[in-house]
Amino acid sequence: NRTPERYDRLLLATGSEHQGYRFAQSLGHTIIPCVPSLFTFKVTDNRLTDLSGISFPDVHLAISLGDSKKLEQSGPLLITHWGLSGPAVLKLSAWGARLLHDCHYHADLTINFLPELSTDQLTTRLLAYKQNNPKRFITTESPVPIPKRYWSRIVQYVGIADDTTWTHLSKEQMTSIITEVTRARFAICGKGIFKEEFVTCGGVDLKEVDFKTMQSKLCPGLYLAGEILDIDGITGGFNFQSCWTTGWLAGMSMVL
Image (tube, rainbow, N blue to C red; front, side, top):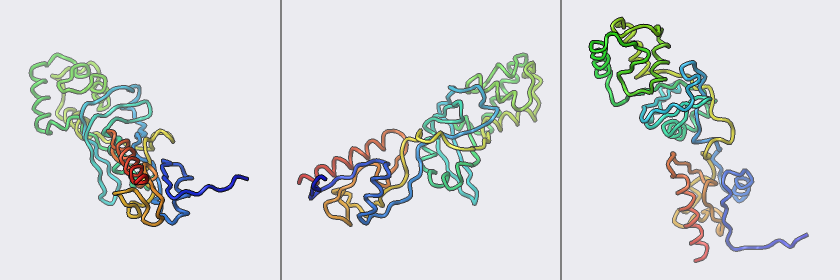
């Protein structure tokens, strides 16, 4: 058997490994329960079938979780073969990591694909296009900046035949299109597969760490950095920066 080695300083930077959490807990630390963060949404819906790869530069997302709880985010959106991804989804999943975990990743999602246009502005644009292009087919001619394949899909989804021209667009059909563009509702039925999420929400309680040195307030000589802490940021490199910064602070403090 090897003789145990003793150190006067120890840095725990074990990421989301359970062994690191158990070790910190054995030394008196509180571990905030860990849940996935920065994940994609699983959505099974005919409007998305076979459209994997289509992206939208700027959408507005809103999740309703019951009891008047609502989360909102904006940004790029990507359709995938399992549902929805992209910066807007990842940011929304970060802010709602615990709430979505508690509801087993089932929630109602509302998407505004053209948040820069009000309902009145969109209505005016559609009416003008209808007047100026009466003989063009609705399915293939979109008057708004939405990917053509997705435009065709929502036109079909609201029950408009492929051979319908703009002159024959009824008021009810126009209302349905506007709803699908500005208030499309989807059911989230899960998240991306296990281990595809980017970071973990949870870890060592931040109240138990001195952020000037990253030293434990409960166990002198113990330093903590990175994802073992209860820190998770939105997409955009913030989690990397947190790891680098806390690691640098801990390293510099340990050698002084």
